[in-house]
Length: 289
Ligand code: MN
Image 1 (cartoon, rainbow, N blue to C red):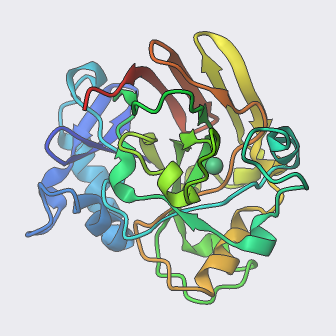
Image 2 (image 1 turned 120 degrees about the vertical axis):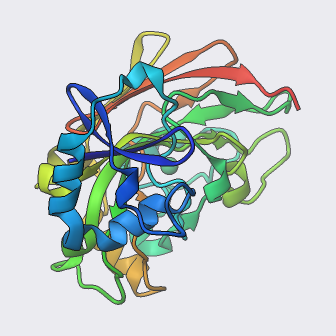
């Protein structure tokens, strides 16, 4: 099932016909708020048949007639894996501000956090802040959404805690020009985390490793890889993080970018695509504030 959040925090099921509104299933006081999807994820197993029936009864609305939001607008945690692809780690050597040796993987350094407030919907604009001489990069990534609280979970059981998957671009300000801000800040400028277009439930993605991820800038294919190339895969990422703190229903964990990372400029158009999950098209602009 493909779940979307749209307009003023409505929840829909996306089919080939369009979006079917199921907002009336969301209990008060969460319905109509940015937290509606957290409630749905938490209660989904118990109301899945109601979701099917409600979606079947709702007339489809065209995708082009709505504004899609991030499919989980307010995760309690937005975790991210650093340097989780060998080819990407290699290409980062020599980029200004990167360490000279091989980058350490999530097995050594764990996760970092992006601010959830940096998220935007799958057709919103990425806005580059006025920082002359600095480089902004795209990182196309698979993100997972937690379904059941994960506390000290083994990698063997980790996928039982995954509700579904979505696509995420981890936009990044590189260190440089004598500046080396903390990683969470460089990756948390407003609009630096496009997410979507849908949250696809895990039953439609039996093996996330098989998914291909691709990203184009102005029509040029820049990133093209399989999730299987991750150094630390989805189950082990959950194992590591869930021993630090319990992961909550609706939490997002973005798994790290393949190689092909490169700079963005105002006027660019980004397209990112993840097998079985979908595609986002995002313009890049100069920030006006
Ligand atoms: Mn990343």
